[in-house]
Length: 50
Image (cartoon, rainbow, N blue to C red; front, top):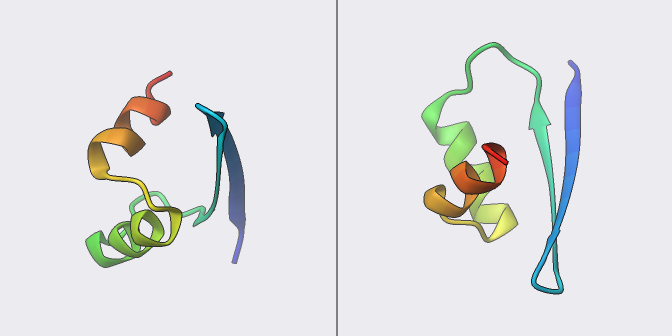
């Protein structure tokens, strides 16, 4: 299985996440990734769309 690792630095806060490279992520997988990263869905979408 392949994974993508991402790091964001914002407001002196470093956020690191590892995401499996699937075409579609299951809702539970995405929820767990967000929980582990400490991000809300809105924060995640804002960073994703930079």
